[in-house]
Length: 224
Image (cartoon, rainbow, N blue to C red; front, side, top):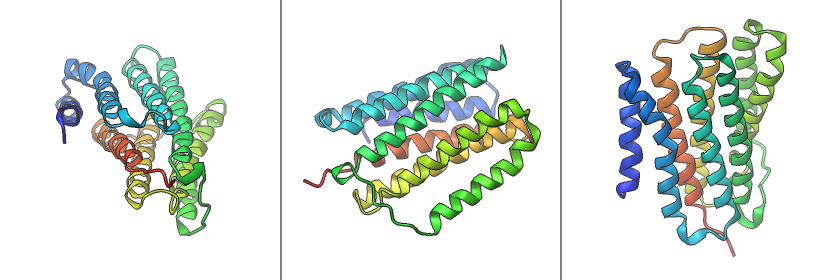
């Protein structure tokens, strides 16, 4: 790992420490730095691949994630900051979906069905059971939309199988799965059930997820 990679992980570890020991100032410094550190790392690693379309989409997805991180810092001031943050992450997921598709051989997905998509559907059903009964009907629609986009993100990551390098496929699927777990913990803790150490769980899975997705996509090589 180079210095920029170490910087991302140092910021990530400090963020986890800030949540564990409730050091609010450290949290306010580290959380906005996370995606900046990852963007700097990504730009260096992808410098000679700017002509590949997925690179621009990953940059945009990380920028939306950065906006989401900042918005969620201010949820204590007004609940609208929470929904602004969720809106930013919804945009990030949509752009990641495009990036996943672009980072394939000949910009094409390999739609091969297996048990995995059904696991995703079952997970969606579980989340609906745990969350929807506890929220107002007005909020149920955007929450459901967000969950569907999350599921689509994982499925598109899965359907890259056989149409990118094995390492790229594996890292991106794992990263997308951890991102979904992070968002699920956030939603459950926010809307239905209190989860102990939820902040650490949310950010821990999020930090690892973003790293795996970015590095997984960097492992993609065009098949020309």
